[in-house]
Length: 222
Image (tube, rainbow, N blue to C red; front, side):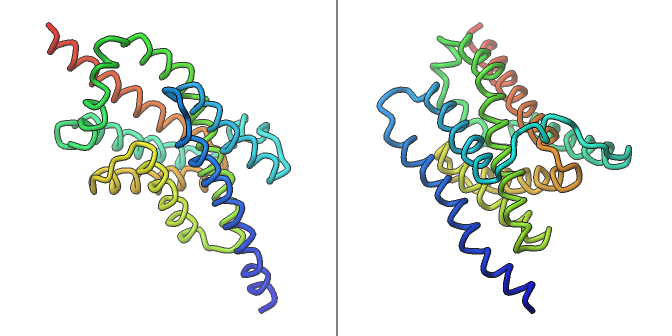
């Protein structure tokens, strides 16, 4: 009884921490007066990496080493990653992906070099920060008061909300795709206690998407 009461008392603290970081990020991002590329990187690091580290009172060193897991879990994770990659490569069946990248057509046509710089240099910084927040910080804080299944559902819901606002895409396929992806990413963390599996999954997906879109656009130009 007292244990459950303690968990309930921790709920307002956890929600306050999460939404303070979340809302602070969006307030500053939406008030940028520039194109926001470098500022977006800075805000991701500040709100999703630095602030959670301060709250957790722990460094990132624990996340820099892959945890020891058995071969069965490795194969399960690899299998899920392959399935997601296959799904993403069937881009013709996912209109929301085409809409997202077609909106950046000018960028692909005129500043294609910027895509490589962002994907290979800036994107990893953003993804590490986001994975530390949504998987490490969020899951660990919610695990204090919720079961693992509930934690997966809540972190996936908050991640989808973030993606919707960030990309400004309200397509149901986009929501469903990211929700299922977030469930898998959360499961990766619960199995391994490391953000690297979810990080590399997202990074590879984005690199493949940009590569496919750039290839299609180059063919159109020819």
